[in-house]
Image (tube, rainbow, N blue to C red; front, side, top):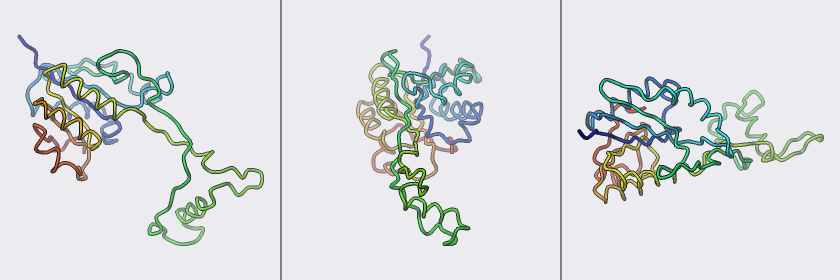
Amino acid sequence: MIRKTAIAILDYDNIDERYRSNHPALEQELYRQISKIDIFDEIKLRMYGGWFEQRNPSISAQALAPWIGQFPKAIEKTMLSAELARSLAFERRVLPYTFRKRTRSTLITVDPRQIHKHDETCDIYRLQQLLSKQRCDSPLCGKPFKDALLVNEQKLIDTMICADLIYYSQSTDWPIILVSSDDDFVPALRLIKNQNKKVYVLHTKNESYRYRMEYVENDCDNILQEGMLV
């Protein structure tokens, strides 16, 4: 008997914090939404994010490891498996440097409409004044702010997801479910649909998906968004 399998590609940081902090609720909602397509024997959950700082597991990857270790698990008659996407799907060679810290440019502006009062009692006003200087006022310091500010960022994740979407569409006949509202994936979705493959989108945001009507809604088998991760 042929097992019915689906692959869910999760853009993990694109999922609302309420679900990222409540994994049982995330599992149930994913199962509920994906089961609208069909009742599957197995749903494979593949999580994408910045899992490696240089060649070491990032703090996020370490925090998720206990949850991932609980799989496989069953919900009703469907088996759920889960993994962190540490490599491209077609190989097992770890893709490092997907989480990075870099210095942040201080070309940040404050929206003046958000300033409640133009004096030292308003922190937003003080922030505006501070950022306008570009460096520390202290004669003992004087360092540019850009040398002190770090930003955490994910690298390669969107291209990993696009590559794996295409890989699964070409190497399996599984329905593919993309869990994200990031419109960077629209070109890959259109390519897959052009190949007459089954691809679905589970949206994670309430706001309008700017390409939804023009490029996605008529090209994907379904836009599953009712209550999905929003």
